[in-house]
Amino acid sequence: MDGNKKLKKTCTILMIINIFLTFYIFGMPKVYENKLHFTMDHHVIYSRNTQYYKLDEDYTATDLDGEEVVLKEGEYLTYSQIDFPNENFPDIESHVCYREHRFSEEILDEAQYHDAAEEYKHDLDEINKKIDENGERDYMLYRLAIIFWFVIPSQMQLIYYPCGIVGGLIAFAFEKHRFKRLSKKDAYKRFIVTDTVIAAIIITLTVIYMIFPITCK
Image (cartoon, rainbow, N blue to C red):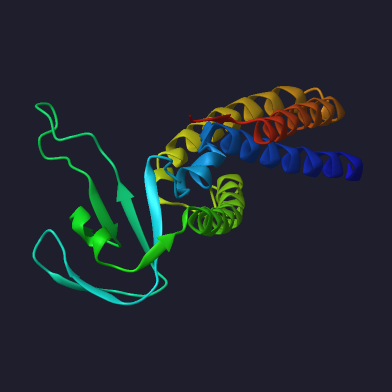
């Protein structure tokens, strides 16, 4: 009798494990965010159609909106040379930019500056390197949140719970039916072996999918 009690206890533990695993695999996200959304998508792009200058001294100018702006020494001006306006793009024209301000090309005849294309590209490389480092960290946190989706819920993940609950209920009904049928024959060892194999299969498939997930583009 003591032997059967231990076997029943083992069966119960395995039933709980398999019900949870089924809940987990039914509820887990099936499509992951692409890693590039955390890194390259946030890169600052270096445009070869833009000229980059660095100011050699402070300069006060009036932007295209009529606002007086002090341009600071050591900061960048960008000059986008565009062949417009034309009939298709009448509102687009060549302009000089300083932060969020736009100026007419005349500013290039008045301000003191030097060509800084290589400096700007170097600065962008450093910025993008930092973005990649932060993106790697954010992506790892995102993957951890996906692994523990049932512990760390988010607004978008609430839909996962009903899916997981449905899977858990199916597993519960299946396990209960098997246990009731096999317990009549005292076939507890058979139940244990089968449930162990089922748990191993679910865990293996889950781990494989986590290593090689389907990701969005």
